[in-house]
Image (cartoon, rainbow, N blue to C red; front, side, top):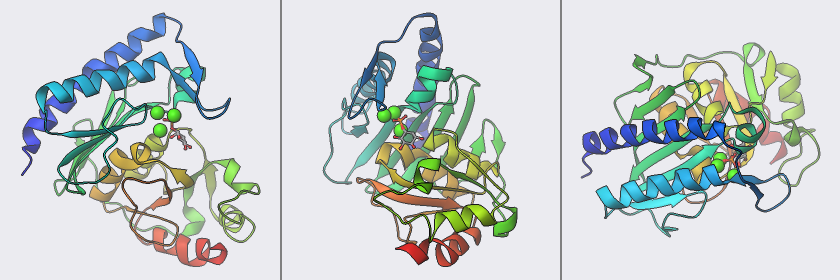
Length: 266
Ligand code: IPD
Ligand code: CA
Ligand code: CA
Ligand code: CA
């Protein structure tokens, strides 16, 4: 059984240190590279931050496994044991263009079960964290359980790309009617930020067609600790080592979004 208190203590210290390094990097010009396409950015700071965590974890917890976006982890094929799922900078485009609105995201699981979730806004020094079964916190403030809300009063996070024709969902039957019915939409460019915005009630739902494990591993634990729901578009559990389409929302609203809108186009 994992010693979550010890893991939590180290993770927080490393997040603080990594955050300071990222903020001091603003004084230098980052090296910007592209990955799968010209809009898929990565910088030396993403890479150095992931390397920083992998070195610390390997030194301190040599039997733990690591899955990191930038490939410095172990590329685990299963979920047995303790696994750290790390996105060193979630929102790299924001990091490059805005120097804000990006997060460090870490989810730590034991045999596929949630343990600790961290989403750290290094610029504003806001740490969102949760320990499974013990509630979620925004810095030291315990977050209250999420309450139900009708669709007409909901503010939802959605990227406008999913409202134009795409290979994953027919927006005409699903997302466009939803966008017409809700109070408003927002798009922040960092999945981890959008997850914790649902956890804090600043957004009521977040819908996206494609997230990787490192995008959602930390935020999922935080949202679920306040009673929010995180599933695929059919309401099924996420596959922790694969890409998933995702709907995150308050209880009640989550079921409504799936039944009344998303199920019409699947
Ligand atoms: C991206 C952000 C973005 C989401 C993309 C992710 P990255 O992560 O979370 O909001 O829409 O799907 O890939 O690449 O900046 O870590
Ligand atoms: Ca990326
Ligand atoms: Ca990401
Ligand atoms: Ca990233």
